[in-house]
Length: 442
View (cartoon, rainbow, N blue to C red):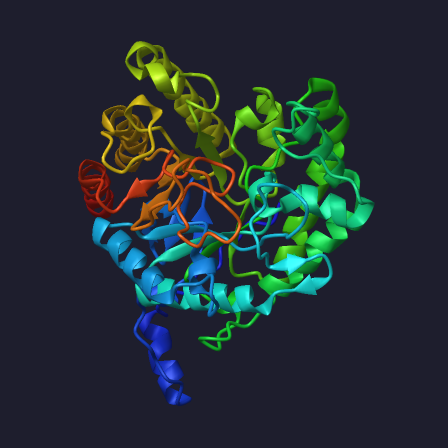
């Protein structure tokens, strides 16, 4: 595999005099001009381990767009709020494919062969604001799920066919099984790679800096939650093409940008019916591993009966956390819990509903990060899902509608307010901030 070990560090004192002899300008090293790298199971920022408390804010490029659907002032306010909480790492959507999927957001970064430069500039603006606050970002380059178009929309572009998620005529697992065709489609992958080249090779229109030279980027991420299907027979059939897509895309990115880390964005063993061999092989040519944890979505708890189901759910969460720590240790790679979400009490959506069970859930994830920082383990950070901030839904049924611009961390296919953290969630803010402070001094 290609192991990225290049770091921007201060040259040794012996070299300084030599550089001065030739009139080279010396600059002071700071965290905003160093690339994050990997050494074994650690991420490094210069000569120090890089650990972080992070958040998901998928809609950053949308707020950054100079358009009716954008809100640059709000973007600044949200980033300031996150900075105040101690958040130093953001996971941001860096693609969306506009098409026929019912829950797919519009506009997209592209609509088949037409590119939406306004959204690319929106991402440029967002990244410039991230850099101003000395934050880092993970940019994911497509989506397995329908809410931003993703792989299914690429299939529609190239075959004219698609399956909608939650379609009564095509119930689960029709969507993930059909989506696995993406990995076998040269035409669909070619279109996806066009986007990869366009973005990874882009120069930020706001800062004038090439993305490959932007140290505010922590990693390029191949996809949000890529799965090789769902039905065991489909998964087995798909795996060779799934691995080839991962390896070839990582190789393509590295051919354009040798400075940044590459991540996959996989949920963990939940993405492959519990198969650890798939997780291990999928990350062979990837710099660090990820895990997502969704107790309510995966049926480990009942959102309407959290009191009765949380004790057993706690065990499953802890087991899943420890399983992925073990796998990361086996791979000798850093691990990030880059998505984890839990409903408000009673699985209600209003910002004033308590979050007592969510608080306990976050503490489990944060303890895993803190324990690793103390004992040399592989967990280097986390990104909670997700930041709602000041957004409030205008719709009484809590559903997203085309044209809505009150973007929340809860994406368009989900109830607005389901998992996101609002600006008034003070008890959650305290937990996040205290964790961020502990990580900062560890």
